[in-house]
Image (cartoon, rainbow, N blue to C red; front, side, top):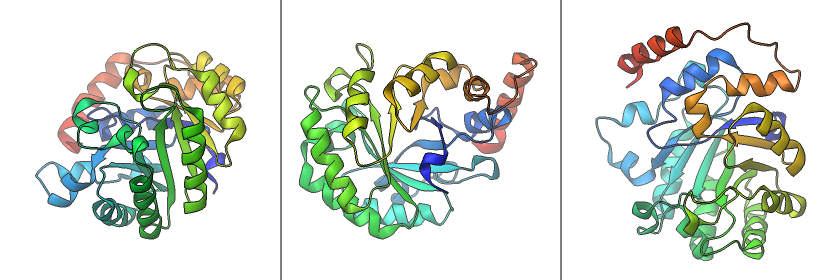
Length: 265
């Protein structure tokens, strides 16, 4: 199976891309690629009472990707190896999170300002897993910087990365302004790797528009999937891949998700 066989992806969101959300999404659509929450490599290696749920892949998760964050190549490689034993389809490296508590540690999007360290992380993670290796990144750090993105993509390709996800904002914007899908399209046109586009998808109709206009290999949806776990099913309906939903029982879904909190967290 190639990553380009998939079209829609759930974004890795801390405290939101939980087993509860993932199971609700799979209730409606089976072929979504689910991502874990953003997981700290060092925190997982240190252990903790809540780690079991974070690092577990459940039967309903397939296809599934673990996303890891950090800037210690050894820790990143070690946790990539450990998580691969859960049999996900891939391991994703976070080079896109712009939150202050991460970038002040040199994690997430801050890695876009440290090319050599990023290369070391990619290299050791590639040696540590036989699964897909991917990177989630932004269009720059201080500003949109397509040349920087191209430089990183070239390195990713040479070091064995299988695909990238591009969020259409530079890191300093955090979540201000609208994700720039024109830049995502430009990156896709020059990338030697499959590109998943990400940012500000608010409906199934918009997801299909972004997919077709950008010519990306797939679309990743985050916050709107939390509000409407059936959005991926709606996307597939528009593409003629899945049959239309007859109805959505919001109350039943809500109660089911509440019950799953006691099971999976």
